[in-house]
Length: 109
Image (cartoon, one colour):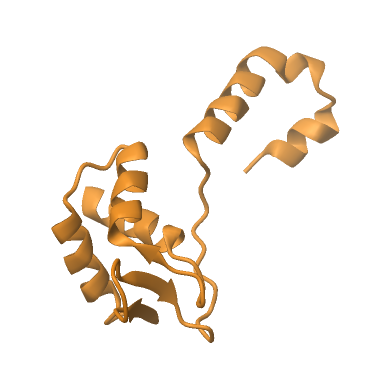
């Protein structure tokens, strides 16, 4: 299951063409999110994912970059950064009684 979550995290990091992201940046961001993996594994994953999703590898210059194709549909998974999740948890725990009911309803998933 951890591999699936790592793949989702990687797919969310990849920008739409003409922007691109390289393997070292993906590796660093994954590490920040708690995923320990190697750059070679990331490269293999990207190659495999590009057979399923419209990902483009720009290998004209190093470091190689990855992007979603210009015509690719948006890829979005519901989720949030850990800092945002912590903020919502703290609001729920300590401020719920101070926030109007209508605002609390708007914050529900």
